[in-house]
Image (cartoon, rainbow, N blue to C red; front, side, top):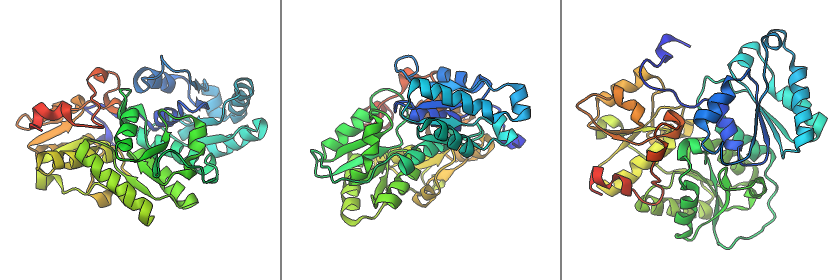
Length: 387
């Protein structure tokens, strides 16, 4: 890490290890963070709003200094296997942290050994705490798409067209009803939801995902799994976050078109911030979708800047990327108005209008009660933009 990557003023996003745990939290598996203790306490204190209300098997390996130096992977494998045999999870996931990154732990091999001992599907994730939650959650969703989704059986739902919602974690959508609102918004447009990855669905429903007509990636963490479902089963995907009535109409039209043609689509298509001087800052796909929705609602063009590593496919949609504080600041200086988490305000110039939009993956629980559910309408922004 260079000094340029050191944040002097702003916060940092939840790490990739937390992203793995968040993606898998509701699915009945067992997630083990291979670390001494710090990563798990950060996760359950700041990154996981479901921690005190929902049971989930998320553990720490209690890695010691001696084990880190001598590389006693056998203890990790044995502890995971014994816990799995006692608790009977649907799967086992072992995720890395900075210490095993430095010592070179082979997480794929660890998972193979655990699965051989227990007969339980096991996954190893070489997360390192140096990347954002988007990368970790994306790895977890993709692993589920590769191994846990069954071959299609032609089962029909109550809708003639249904989708897999992929990329749902509280790090992007908090716990104020976004998954239900997305289902409602799509249902009003004649589109059902086959599975919700991974808030509001059981693992059984994800296993049935191959019977959906289209996958709808609602955040950047859902894109890898959506592509895998396309590669495995030919299910096309649309990438867009439901956000406001007019934008949701566009999403529904894109889903129908994808089902008809089999062609996937990244729905947002944005100009640059220097052209608009109006910027939404955050996770790439959710920021771009809000920018698109505001463009429709206000009649003024908006742009989006991803402050976490975006999927390569998003660059074609006009989404800009700046990960480090020093790289973000020049974009903010070019703006008339910025929508971002409140913790960005100190680096926004005083002459730029700032509209706070708290993001759980950035500021954690600090502003949780101020996070709006923008899925079906943009009412919380009416006072800001006279919608």
